[in-house]
Length: 90
Image 1 (tube, one colour):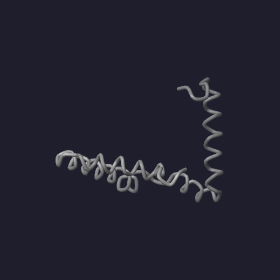
Image 2 (image 1 turned 30 degrees about the vertical axis):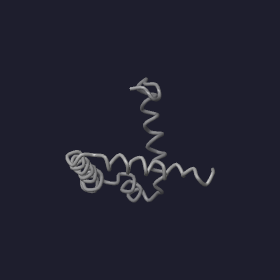
Image 3 (image 1 turned 135 degrees about the vertical axis):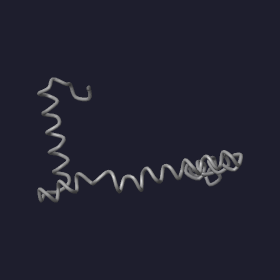
């Protein structure tokens, strides 16, 4: 990569920076609302409504998390094969 050619991430940052600079005040407020809603959905709601199932199961069974995930995948695969569904199809 030559010194005058910017890194991919630098170019991507500049693209978004320049794009957001050209927004109208109304569109900037809308993007702020979207960012706040995403933060609420992923940070706040996740903490209250989506418990860490794998961690909970691992501590109850006194095994590693990877073992819980592996057992769950094997069990789901067995249920799919018994019910006649092919892998990856509903």
